[in-house]
Image (cartoon, rainbow, N blue to C red; front, side):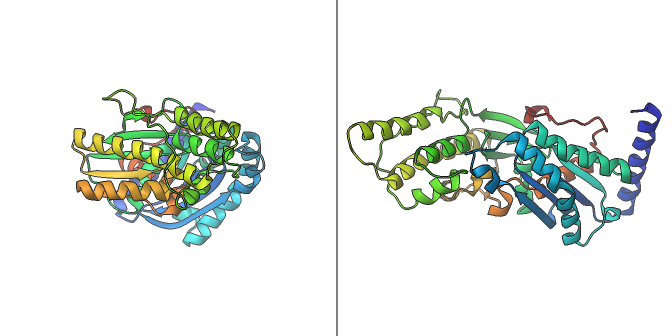
Length: 360
Protein backbone atom coordinates (compact mmCIF):
# COMPACT_ATOMS: atom_id res chain seq x y z
CA UNK A 1 0.00 0.00 0.00
CA UNK A 2 1.13 3.56 -0.71
CA UNK A 3 3.18 4.89 2.23
CA UNK A 4 1.52 8.32 2.26
CA UNK A 5 -1.93 6.76 2.20
CA UNK A 6 -1.04 4.49 5.11
CA UNK A 7 0.24 7.46 7.11
CA UNK A 8 -2.96 9.36 6.43
CA UNK A 9 -4.92 6.37 7.71
CA UNK A 10 -2.78 6.20 10.84
CA UNK A 11 -3.33 9.91 11.47
CA UNK A 12 -7.10 9.47 11.18
CA UNK A 13 -7.02 6.54 13.59
CA UNK A 14 -4.94 8.39 16.16
CA UNK A 15 -7.14 11.46 15.92
CA UNK A 16 -10.30 9.39 16.35
CA UNK A 17 -8.77 7.65 19.37
CA UNK A 18 -7.64 10.84 21.07
CA UNK A 19 -10.95 12.58 20.42
CA UNK A 20 -12.91 9.72 21.95
CA UNK A 21 -10.61 9.38 24.99
CA UNK A 22 -10.97 13.08 25.72
CA UNK A 23 -14.76 12.89 25.49
CA UNK A 24 -15.06 10.50 28.44
CA UNK A 25 -17.91 8.70 26.67
CA UNK A 26 -18.42 4.90 26.77
CA UNK A 27 -16.30 2.80 24.42
CA UNK A 28 -18.08 0.54 21.95
CA UNK A 29 -15.95 -2.16 20.35
CA UNK A 30 -17.06 -4.38 17.49
CA UNK A 31 -15.54 -7.84 17.91
CA UNK A 32 -15.06 -10.32 15.05
CA UNK A 33 -14.19 -14.02 15.51
CA UNK A 34 -13.59 -16.47 12.62
CA UNK A 35 -10.74 -18.67 13.85
CA UNK A 36 -12.43 -22.03 13.21
CA UNK A 37 -16.02 -22.89 12.32
CA UNK A 38 -18.05 -20.14 14.02
CA UNK A 39 -18.62 -16.79 12.36
CA UNK A 40 -19.28 -14.34 15.18
CA UNK A 41 -19.67 -10.60 15.66
CA UNK A 42 -20.40 -8.72 18.86
CA UNK A 43 -20.72 -5.22 20.25
CA UNK A 44 -19.35 -4.75 23.77
CA UNK A 45 -19.47 -1.59 25.86
CA UNK A 46 -16.42 -0.67 27.98
CA UNK A 47 -15.06 -4.20 27.77
CA UNK A 48 -17.69 -5.64 30.11
CA UNK A 49 -21.26 -5.14 28.89
CA UNK A 50 -22.36 -7.36 25.99
CA UNK A 51 -24.89 -5.57 23.79
CA UNK A 52 -24.95 -8.30 21.15
CA UNK A 53 -23.14 -11.56 20.45
CA UNK A 54 -24.21 -13.18 17.19
CA UNK A 55 -22.80 -16.62 16.35
CA UNK A 56 -23.32 -18.45 13.06
CA UNK A 57 -22.28 -22.03 13.80
CA UNK A 58 -21.16 -24.54 11.19
CA UNK A 59 -21.36 -27.58 13.47
CA UNK A 60 -24.08 -29.30 11.45
CA UNK A 61 -22.08 -28.87 8.23
CA UNK A 62 -18.87 -30.43 9.58
CA UNK A 63 -20.62 -33.15 11.59
CA UNK A 64 -20.80 -35.45 8.57
CA UNK A 65 -17.01 -35.28 8.17
CA UNK A 66 -16.26 -35.99 11.83
CA UNK A 67 -14.31 -32.73 12.17
CA UNK A 68 -13.82 -29.28 10.70
CA UNK A 69 -12.90 -29.11 7.00
CA UNK A 70 -10.81 -25.92 6.62
CA UNK A 71 -11.82 -25.05 3.05
CA UNK A 72 -15.50 -25.54 3.80
CA UNK A 73 -15.20 -23.42 6.95
CA UNK A 74 -13.48 -20.58 5.09
CA UNK A 75 -16.11 -20.44 2.36
CA UNK A 76 -18.92 -20.42 4.90
CA UNK A 77 -17.23 -17.53 6.75
CA UNK A 78 -17.18 -15.56 3.50
CA UNK A 79 -20.91 -16.15 3.10
CA UNK A 80 -21.75 -15.24 6.71
CA UNK A 81 -19.39 -12.45 7.77
CA UNK A 82 -21.26 -9.41 6.42
CA UNK A 83 -24.68 -10.59 7.57
CA UNK A 84 -23.31 -11.53 11.00
CA UNK A 85 -21.77 -8.07 11.51
CA UNK A 86 -24.96 -6.35 10.38
CA UNK A 87 -27.05 -8.47 12.75
CA UNK A 88 -24.71 -7.76 15.68
CA UNK A 89 -24.96 -4.00 15.08
CA UNK A 90 -28.73 -4.15 14.71
CA UNK A 91 -29.18 -6.24 17.87
CA UNK A 92 -26.99 -3.80 19.80
CA UNK A 93 -28.96 -0.83 18.48
CA UNK A 94 -25.77 0.66 17.02
CA UNK A 95 -24.32 1.61 13.66
CA UNK A 96 -20.71 1.77 12.54
CA UNK A 97 -20.82 5.49 13.41
CA UNK A 98 -21.07 4.44 17.08
CA UNK A 99 -18.14 2.00 17.00
CA UNK A 100 -14.79 3.20 18.34
CA UNK A 101 -12.59 0.22 17.38
CA UNK A 102 -12.60 -3.15 15.62
CA UNK A 103 -11.14 -6.12 17.51
CA UNK A 104 -10.50 -9.27 15.48
CA UNK A 105 -8.96 -12.69 16.10
CA UNK A 106 -5.75 -12.98 14.07
CA UNK A 107 -4.47 -16.26 15.50
CA UNK A 108 -4.16 -19.05 16.26
CA UNK A 109 -6.64 -20.91 14.09
CA UNK A 110 -7.27 -22.06 10.53
CA UNK A 111 -5.45 -19.62 8.28
CA UNK A 112 -8.21 -19.37 5.68
CA UNK A 113 -10.83 -18.79 8.33
CA UNK A 114 -8.70 -16.19 10.14
CA UNK A 115 -8.15 -14.24 6.93
CA UNK A 116 -11.87 -13.74 6.39
CA UNK A 117 -12.30 -12.01 9.74
CA UNK A 118 -9.06 -10.04 9.45
CA UNK A 119 -9.96 -8.78 5.96
CA UNK A 120 -13.41 -7.67 7.13
CA UNK A 121 -11.96 -5.90 10.17
CA UNK A 122 -9.29 -4.11 8.13
CA UNK A 123 -11.89 -2.97 5.59
CA UNK A 124 -14.07 -1.43 8.31
CA UNK A 125 -11.09 0.16 10.06
CA UNK A 126 -9.84 1.72 6.82
CA UNK A 127 -13.27 2.91 5.74
CA UNK A 128 -14.22 4.41 9.10
CA UNK A 129 -10.78 5.59 10.25
CA UNK A 130 -11.04 3.79 13.61
CA UNK A 131 -8.45 1.62 15.40
CA UNK A 132 -7.83 -1.97 14.36
CA UNK A 133 -6.95 -4.36 17.21
CA UNK A 134 -5.50 -7.82 16.66
CA UNK A 135 -6.52 -10.23 19.43
CA UNK A 136 -5.08 -13.63 20.33
CA UNK A 137 -7.82 -16.25 20.35
CA UNK A 138 -6.80 -17.69 23.73
CA UNK A 139 -6.57 -14.22 25.26
CA UNK A 140 -10.17 -13.81 24.14
CA UNK A 141 -11.22 -16.99 25.94
CA UNK A 142 -9.52 -15.77 29.11
CA UNK A 143 -11.15 -12.35 28.92
CA UNK A 144 -14.59 -13.92 28.49
CA UNK A 145 -14.40 -14.16 32.28
CA UNK A 146 -14.24 -10.35 32.58
CA UNK A 147 -17.72 -10.25 31.06
CA UNK A 148 -18.83 -12.06 34.21
CA UNK A 149 -16.63 -10.70 36.99
CA UNK A 150 -13.65 -8.37 37.36
CA UNK A 151 -10.22 -9.99 37.28
CA UNK A 152 -8.23 -10.05 40.52
CA UNK A 153 -4.48 -10.22 39.88
CA UNK A 154 -2.32 -12.19 40.13
CA UNK A 155 -4.39 -15.07 38.80
CA UNK A 156 -4.20 -18.47 37.13
CA UNK A 157 -6.23 -19.20 34.00
CA UNK A 158 -6.92 -22.80 33.00
CA UNK A 159 -7.58 -22.81 29.25
CA UNK A 160 -9.16 -26.02 27.93
CA UNK A 161 -10.38 -26.26 24.34
CA UNK A 162 -10.30 -28.47 21.28
CA UNK A 163 -6.78 -27.49 20.31
CA UNK A 164 -5.34 -25.99 23.48
CA UNK A 165 -4.78 -26.99 27.10
CA UNK A 166 -2.75 -24.40 28.98
CA UNK A 167 -2.12 -23.03 32.45
CA UNK A 168 -1.55 -19.28 32.19
CA UNK A 169 -0.17 -16.96 34.88
CA UNK A 170 -1.34 -13.33 34.71
CA UNK A 171 0.10 -10.67 37.01
CA UNK A 172 -1.72 -7.82 35.24
CA UNK A 173 -3.89 -7.08 32.21
CA UNK A 174 -2.24 -8.18 28.99
CA UNK A 175 0.50 -10.22 30.70
CA UNK A 176 0.39 -13.91 29.76
CA UNK A 177 2.98 -16.38 31.03
CA UNK A 178 2.40 -19.99 30.03
CA UNK A 179 3.25 -22.28 32.94
CA UNK A 180 2.22 -25.48 31.21
CA UNK A 181 0.66 -26.70 27.99
CA UNK A 182 -0.28 -29.87 26.21
CA UNK A 183 2.54 -32.00 24.81
CA UNK A 184 0.30 -33.96 22.45
CA UNK A 185 -3.49 -34.22 22.34
CA UNK A 186 -5.33 -31.32 23.96
CA UNK A 187 -8.18 -32.29 26.26
CA UNK A 188 -10.81 -31.40 23.67
CA UNK A 189 -9.08 -33.51 21.02
CA UNK A 190 -8.98 -36.47 23.39
CA UNK A 191 -12.69 -36.07 24.07
CA UNK A 192 -13.50 -36.07 20.35
CA UNK A 193 -11.36 -39.15 19.67
CA UNK A 194 -12.87 -41.12 22.55
CA UNK A 195 -16.35 -40.09 21.41
CA UNK A 196 -15.54 -41.36 17.92
CA UNK A 197 -14.44 -44.70 19.41
CA UNK A 198 -17.80 -44.87 21.17
CA UNK A 199 -19.52 -44.08 17.84
CA UNK A 200 -20.77 -40.67 18.95
CA UNK A 201 -21.14 -37.75 16.52
CA UNK A 202 -18.83 -34.73 16.23
CA UNK A 203 -18.25 -32.67 18.31
CA UNK A 204 -17.86 -35.45 20.85
CA UNK A 205 -17.13 -33.50 24.04
CA UNK A 206 -20.72 -32.70 25.01
CA UNK A 207 -21.80 -36.29 24.33
CA UNK A 208 -19.04 -37.75 26.53
CA UNK A 209 -19.88 -35.25 29.29
CA UNK A 210 -23.58 -36.17 29.18
CA UNK A 211 -22.84 -39.90 29.15
CA UNK A 212 -20.32 -39.58 31.98
CA UNK A 213 -23.02 -38.26 34.30
CA UNK A 214 -24.99 -41.46 33.70
CA UNK A 215 -22.14 -43.81 34.59
CA UNK A 216 -19.74 -44.81 37.35
CA UNK A 217 -15.96 -44.29 36.99
CA UNK A 218 -15.09 -47.95 37.60
CA UNK A 219 -12.83 -48.61 34.60
CA UNK A 220 -9.12 -48.32 35.56
CA UNK A 221 -7.48 -45.62 33.42
CA UNK A 222 -4.13 -43.85 33.85
CA UNK A 223 -3.44 -40.31 35.06
CA UNK A 224 -0.58 -38.61 33.23
CA UNK A 225 1.13 -36.39 35.81
CA UNK A 226 4.45 -36.24 33.91
CA UNK A 227 7.44 -34.93 35.93
CA UNK A 228 6.75 -34.01 39.57
CA UNK A 229 7.27 -30.27 38.98
CA UNK A 230 5.69 -30.11 35.52
CA UNK A 231 2.57 -28.10 34.70
CA UNK A 232 2.37 -29.65 31.22
CA UNK A 233 -0.44 -31.94 30.10
CA UNK A 234 -0.56 -35.13 28.04
CA UNK A 235 -3.78 -36.88 27.06
CA UNK A 236 -2.61 -39.02 24.14
CA UNK A 237 -1.77 -41.93 26.43
CA UNK A 238 -5.17 -41.73 28.12
CA UNK A 239 -6.91 -41.73 24.75
CA UNK A 240 -4.88 -44.78 23.72
CA UNK A 241 -5.73 -46.51 27.00
CA UNK A 242 -9.45 -46.05 26.28
CA UNK A 243 -9.05 -47.45 22.76
CA UNK A 244 -7.04 -50.43 24.08
CA UNK A 245 -9.66 -51.09 26.76
CA UNK A 246 -12.39 -51.24 24.11
CA UNK A 247 -10.26 -53.42 21.81
CA UNK A 248 -9.27 -55.87 24.53
CA UNK A 249 -12.86 -56.20 25.73
CA UNK A 250 -14.01 -56.93 22.18
CA UNK A 251 -11.28 -59.58 21.80
CA UNK A 252 -12.52 -61.31 24.95
CA UNK A 253 -16.15 -61.02 23.93
CA UNK A 254 -16.88 -58.75 26.89
CA UNK A 255 -19.03 -55.63 26.99
CA UNK A 256 -18.00 -52.42 28.66
CA UNK A 257 -20.78 -50.08 29.68
CA UNK A 258 -20.19 -46.90 27.59
CA UNK A 259 -21.43 -44.66 30.39
CA UNK A 260 -18.94 -46.13 32.86
CA UNK A 261 -16.09 -45.80 30.37
CA UNK A 262 -17.07 -42.17 29.67
CA UNK A 263 -17.22 -41.46 33.41
CA UNK A 264 -13.80 -43.05 33.95
CA UNK A 265 -12.26 -41.11 31.07
CA UNK A 266 -13.72 -37.82 32.28
CA UNK A 267 -12.62 -38.53 35.84
CA UNK A 268 -9.03 -39.00 34.67
CA UNK A 269 -9.00 -35.83 32.56
CA UNK A 270 -10.58 -33.56 35.14
CA UNK A 271 -8.46 -34.83 38.03
CA UNK A 272 -5.23 -33.93 36.25
CA UNK A 273 -6.54 -30.56 35.04
CA UNK A 274 -7.87 -29.51 38.44
CA UNK A 275 -5.00 -30.73 40.60
CA UNK A 276 -2.33 -29.09 38.43
CA UNK A 277 -4.34 -25.86 38.49
CA UNK A 278 -4.58 -25.87 42.28
CA UNK A 279 -0.86 -26.63 42.59
CA UNK A 280 -0.09 -23.64 40.36
CA UNK A 281 -2.34 -21.45 42.52
CA UNK A 282 -0.54 -22.47 45.71
CA UNK A 283 2.98 -22.20 44.29
CA UNK A 284 2.38 -18.79 42.64
CA UNK A 285 0.15 -17.19 45.25
CA UNK A 286 -2.73 -16.56 42.86
CA UNK A 287 -5.78 -14.70 44.15
CA UNK A 288 -8.20 -16.06 41.58
CA UNK A 289 -8.75 -18.93 39.13
CA UNK A 290 -10.33 -18.46 35.71
CA UNK A 291 -11.68 -21.33 33.60
CA UNK A 292 -11.68 -20.66 29.87
CA UNK A 293 -12.13 -22.34 26.50
CA UNK A 294 -14.71 -24.55 24.84
CA UNK A 295 -14.22 -27.43 27.30
CA UNK A 296 -15.04 -24.97 30.10
CA UNK A 297 -18.63 -25.87 29.22
CA UNK A 298 -17.97 -29.42 30.43
CA UNK A 299 -20.14 -30.00 33.52
CA UNK A 300 -17.77 -32.55 35.02
CA UNK A 301 -14.84 -30.14 34.87
CA UNK A 302 -16.88 -27.22 36.16
CA UNK A 303 -18.21 -29.21 39.11
CA UNK A 304 -14.83 -30.66 40.08
CA UNK A 305 -13.04 -27.32 39.86
CA UNK A 306 -15.79 -25.57 41.80
CA UNK A 307 -15.64 -28.14 44.58
CA UNK A 308 -11.85 -28.05 44.86
CA UNK A 309 -11.63 -24.24 44.76
CA UNK A 310 -14.34 -24.00 47.40
CA UNK A 311 -12.44 -26.45 49.62
CA UNK A 312 -9.20 -24.49 49.14
CA UNK A 313 -10.91 -21.12 49.59
CA UNK A 314 -9.85 -19.92 46.11
CA UNK A 315 -12.20 -17.54 44.21
CA UNK A 316 -13.22 -19.10 40.89
CA UNK A 317 -14.78 -17.49 37.81
CA UNK A 318 -16.39 -19.59 35.07
CA UNK A 319 -18.12 -18.02 32.03
CA UNK A 320 -21.68 -19.04 31.17
CA UNK A 321 -22.01 -21.71 28.50
CA UNK A 322 -22.69 -19.10 25.78
CA UNK A 323 -19.28 -17.50 26.39
CA UNK A 324 -17.29 -20.75 26.54
CA UNK A 325 -17.45 -21.59 22.84
CA UNK A 326 -15.82 -19.38 20.21
CA UNK A 327 -17.59 -16.01 20.19
CA UNK A 328 -16.84 -12.39 19.34
CA UNK A 329 -17.83 -10.90 22.71
CA UNK A 330 -14.70 -12.37 24.27
CA UNK A 331 -12.59 -10.87 21.45
CA UNK A 332 -14.11 -7.44 22.03
CA UNK A 333 -13.51 -7.79 25.79
CA UNK A 334 -9.83 -8.59 25.25
CA UNK A 335 -9.59 -5.89 22.60
CA UNK A 336 -10.82 -3.26 25.05
CA UNK A 337 -7.70 -3.74 27.22
CA UNK A 338 -5.49 -3.09 24.19
CA UNK A 339 -7.65 -0.11 23.21
CA UNK A 340 -7.15 1.46 26.62
CA UNK A 341 -3.38 1.08 26.17
CA UNK A 342 -3.44 2.43 22.60
CA UNK A 343 -2.10 -0.86 21.22
CA UNK A 344 -3.35 -0.95 17.65
CA UNK A 345 -2.53 -3.08 14.61
CA UNK A 346 -1.43 -1.78 11.23
CA UNK A 347 -3.19 -2.47 7.95
CA UNK A 348 -0.67 -5.21 7.19
CA UNK A 349 -2.19 -7.35 9.97
CA UNK A 350 -2.30 -10.95 8.82
CA UNK A 351 -3.74 -14.24 10.01
CA UNK A 352 -1.17 -16.20 12.05
CA UNK A 353 -2.33 -19.81 12.48
CA UNK A 354 0.42 -20.75 14.96
CA UNK A 355 0.42 -17.54 17.00
CA UNK A 356 1.84 -18.04 20.52
CA UNK A 357 0.08 -16.44 23.46
CA UNK A 358 3.39 -15.48 25.05
CA UNK A 359 4.37 -13.58 21.88
CA UNK A 360 1.08 -11.70 21.64
